[in-house]
Length: 354
Image (cartoon, rainbow, N blue to C red; front, side):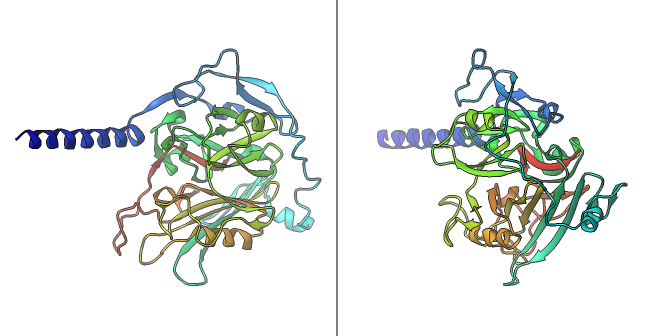
């Protein structure tokens, strides 16, 4: 009897701890802070003002997140020189055709005086997976933005990609790095430093105020130093897929040991400053298996990205364009012909908008 009581006590303890861990990681809202990251959109991208928490007034929570209001400091992006001509690959006629005086759009194209987007709906050569590529050209990086679920920074604060996009008047949106599912990892959005605590093995993407990309390891750089160099966005998911025109993932590499070999994916890449690629694939269904990381890297390479980066995938992978869902996000309930297509609630998006 005594052994039975001990066994039951240990079992209940293990179940209780497991339940708490799941709730703590995925359900309980922590470190909540309202942040209007769009208030920094109007700064000059030739000489940006990056918002950093004041070292004298900021406090840190248990997970290293700043709890202070940001204060401004003037910085330059001299480490990332601006290209002399963002559209040197286009003739004047081609450039004129991209940007239109009036707003023009349909299910696959959007253009106005400052933004051009074309959605390509594709299938891989093996005829196993559907994927979607958004070819994006901008006249200014101010149209390349991020947004937080419920306009609030914190763990487990979530909304669907489409709802966050609508709330921010997005034209095109994809899911971000789902920072809220992690207690650590750099978070810098629209010039605001939101979390400075590093993950030892994290490989991040910095998008600088002159439109260039950089893949770096959090172990090598502080977020503050990256921000002071002119970073406009920093995402902490990874890994980097292409660096300096070279694929840097191996054929068998995955995000972690628990990841599926083929999956729904979201990736972002740069062809040249102000010319970007967003890629989202379907997966986990008989119609569309999904991709390995290496296959995503090959696609981004085929689109001439000289840097490309893997964002959160799986059930998070979503592309939303001009008020309609482009891809078919499936939640991890197994493979089957009758999977429910629905968006996962996430903590942040990357979007194009005004």
